[in-house]
Image 1 (cartoon, rainbow, N blue to C red):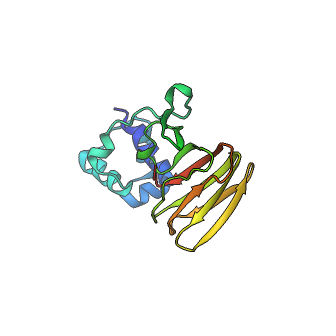
Image 2: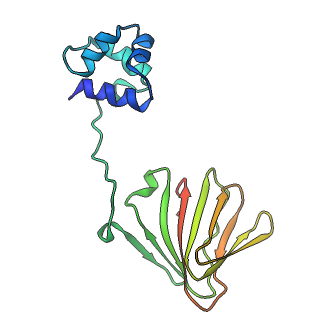
Length: 179
């Protein structure tokens, strides 16, 4: 394992300078620089101190991170076709992430599932047709057509309705995942 690179990654993730990390670990900036460039090796105690300051356990420090994917295509999508709607998950295993983007198609005269109050937020962009967001908690309706967006806090129970004779399609992004 590249210990120096791992220290540098975690330090950068915490937005710490070499000097700040060195000060918090009671090490010299030069020594820490040598560690990050793998010119020297830390003792176990020193590495434990560094890991603690960086907010990770020793086991997490040594845990190899999986290759992170940044792009996805048709082969990665998962489609769930129901009688009144089709949900296309655009990012594999998005439920493990903080954000879950889906394409949501709603048949004519159909409605989505009810989204219960949750900690988080939702964003939507109407790609085709028009929809109505029904806010059950506030007894309100919000009408949206193609090209319009919505941004909701997860505080209220709500769902989406297609009151037209045409399919409605929207990009719906939730945090945390609710689909």
